[in-house]
Structure formats: structure tokens, C-alpha cells
Image (cartoon, rainbow, N blue to C red; front, side, top):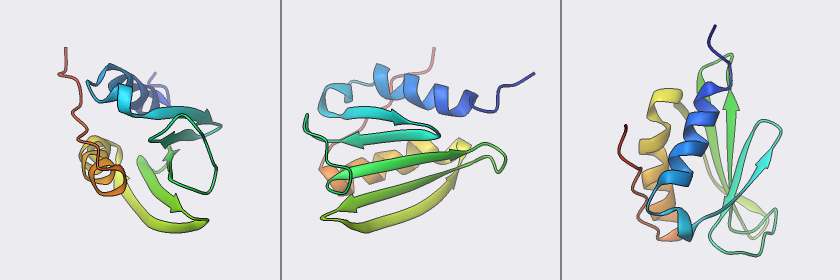
Amino acid sequence: ARSAYAPLLRLSQALGASPSASLLFPTVSYDGLLITDGPLFYRDDRVLFITHFPDEHRFRVQYRLGGATRLDSSCSEADILATLIATFRDCYGVTFTPAPAD
């Protein structure tokens, strides 16, 4: 049986294996990931919330800056890497390159 959270695990592995990993600072929450572009973590400033909804087979991506939500989008599990390529570029100026698949 497929774990409902397998897509979130695969996403975490892809982020960690990426050549861009050293530019990102992740932490985990109950149902997703929180990522910043610096070692200091502020919940409402320069933080990307990636929430997984396994029953819906989708992710929600929210970027918070200065206490306000500046980006709020949703994508399928299959589209999360493409979504993050654009989001990391637009929010952090980071060129996110997913690691090649094995």
C-alpha cells in the first residue's frame, strides 16, 4: 500500500539532494515543510509554507513576508517541483535545481 505521505517524503528527499540545498533552511511541521533562505527562522517573515493534502493529492504553497501572505497557490503532487522552481526564484532569488532522478 502506498503511504499517503510518500509525496511529501519524496519532496523532502529531492530538496535535500538538490545542488540548491545549501541555500535553503528547512524545518518540518505536522503536515508539511517550512523553508527560509537564511539560518534565522521567523514564522511570519521570509518563510515558505509547503503543506501536503494527501487525500486531495495536492500541495499548498504559501509565502509569508512581513507578517502577510504574499503568495498562496495550490498544485498537484506531480507539479510540486515545477512550482517550487518558480517560487524559490520569485521569493528568494534562488535557482532551485532538483537533483536528477535515479
